[in-house]
Image 1 (spheres, helix red, strand yellow):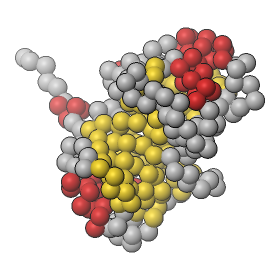
Image 2 (image 1 turned 90 degrees about the vertical axis):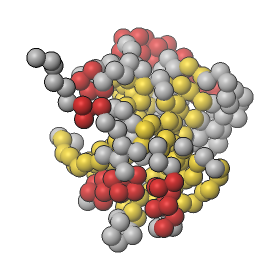
Image 3 (image 1 turned 135 degrees about the vertical axis):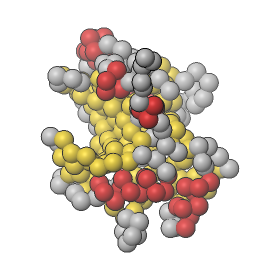
Length: 256
C-alpha cells in the first residue's frame, strides 16, 4: 500500500512570503558589527550598499535598516540559525565593540535571546524539522505584543482581508493569534497586559498572490495610508471588522 500523506500540511494562504522586517538604526557601523559579525548574517551585495541603508539577508527573508533614529519592534523576531555554538562564539567576540549599547544575550533551553544595540529582540533557534520544517536559515515568525482581548479580532482580520490561515491558540505564555504568511512562516500576535510603547513606524513586508483583493478590502475601510508603487501599498492598523475599532497598529507593506 502506498504511503498516505496529509497534503494539507503544505498548503499556504494568499500570503506567500514574509520578505523583510524594517527598523531604522542611527549607526551603520554598529549595525554591521551586530548583524554581520555578531549574528553571522550577510549583507545583500546588490541593493542598498551605501551608508544610508543596509539590507541583511536571513535565508529568503531580510532585515532592512535605514539610517534614522532607532525604531524598536514591539515583540521579537524568531530566527533559525545553523549553529547555536557558533552564534554564541560570535556574540562573545562583539561584546567589547557593543559595550554601552542595549546589546546582550541569554541562553535558554531551546533558543538564545539576543538584544540588538538599540533594543530589538531576536530569538534564535537551531534547525528543527518539527517546529520549522526544512528551514536551516531563515525567519519563521515575527511576534508582536498586543493588548489583551485582541487575538480573535486579529485572526479574523487576516483570514477575511488577506485570505490566509489564522487561528487563536494558547500556551504557557498566554493567548495569541497565529497568522500564516508563507510556508512555515507566521505572524504571531501575543496578548499582554503590559503597557505597550507608542508605535514608532517600524514595518514588515509580505508577498501576496492575489494582490488586488486585499487592497480593495483595505481601501473600503480606509486603511491604506500609502500608495507608493504599482507593486506595493501600505496599511498601518489592524481593526475589528465589525466595529472598525483599531486593535493593533502594525505597519505592513504588501508586495506582489
